Length: 369
Image (cartoon, rainbow, N blue to C red; front, side, top):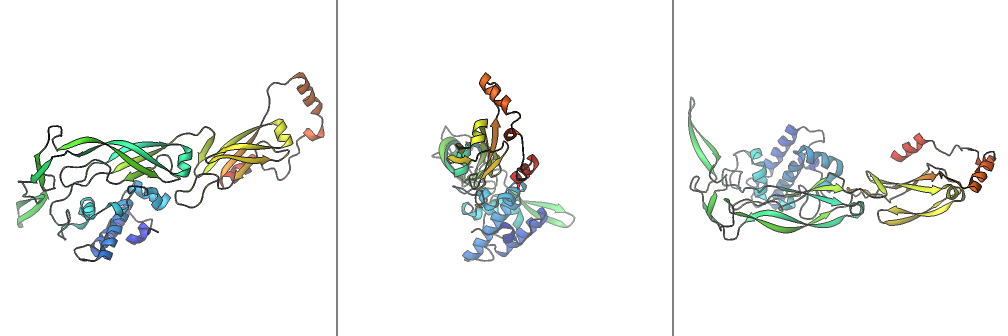
């Protein structure tokens, strides 16, 4: 089981943005590879801290994590902040400002060339309620920017492959030296050398790729999943961007979703309500047969446990709530009308609600409890 992000950084859920950043810097410096050479355990802790910071430092990701936990970011290809898709270059390129210039070695951490990251791509995936209830694997075709075959790069002459240029400034305190990202290579230490005619100015081409996306059961409309490394490439020795997958839930013909619960409106005739009947109703995994007792009242709600949507956190499934509606005919034959006229004064047709018959407000209260 994955460790809680707040526990990894040693903070509470109410921690401020500044407190999250401070806690991460402390952990990152403690387990930094330069301070713990050839120590796989320290490197693992370093990556876990970076994974936690990647999620908790982003307000939208943090809100999803607080609501759904690790499940909000999991799936094939490395959804979310899983460090399985992060290496040291990823961490230093994304969070280099956390470390400052106190360490050398890794790209972005000590002033050397850094690996650029390609831009993210965004797509929308439409899912039926059945697919959401069971989880599904979708194959989507995307157009990604990739390096063209035959492209070569050479060492940047502006920074001599360092990725940074040094500037000396005269101040009242004397001459001060500062480093900034190389304007020619963008910090990668490389510039384009040769490219084919079909490539753009950065040596990139558009290429179709089919990406397989495993979507876990229980996702909600508007949720975003991340497939690591399936966005656009960047020039040179770069890190691919990510593919951001936005979930769109298609409306079901019969079922209405409310969180993990489902609602179904069942209409029955007056005769069926009086005599009782068995009915087949729609559920996300096929039809379900229910038995209605004799004399069932309109407005009664039948709860079918576990027939709703699975929790994305793995805490079981919601329920299917069947709302019974007795349908009243608008037109009657002469004989039918005579029957009901004779029943007007019959005591069996006079309403006698029992104490067990709940009011509308009690039903609504039960429904949301």
